[in-house]
Image (cartoon, rainbow, N blue to C red; front, side, top):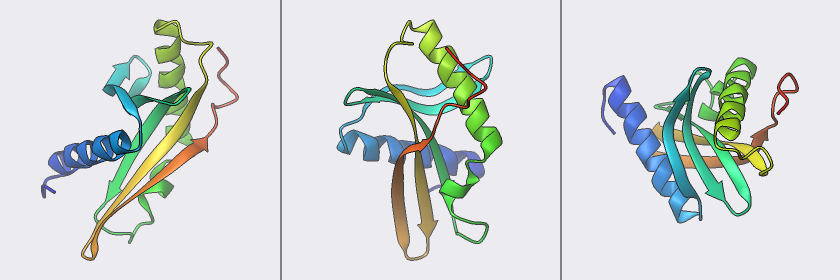
Length: 126
């Protein structure tokens, strides 16, 4: 992993994409952006369109990577996801929000996938 912040983030997303492919996810988009924000990875897994947030940390001093996906971040991801589904005509498809947490500590790199990590914010309806 590269020491600079942007390089570390890119390496983490590459690691997450490979991890997901090995678990049967088909990557549709990476770093998808619309007027509402950005989603790290959009993939298809079985019958679901999955919106994935990748969080990586060099230590757990400030908490686990998964804990960094705050309620505000969930609302932003919800907006982007709904915009994506509308723009692609996929509002009738089942979707879910997953989080990939990557911990890069001295004892090695650990990856944790949380499927269905949160629900679409109730403020947003298709």
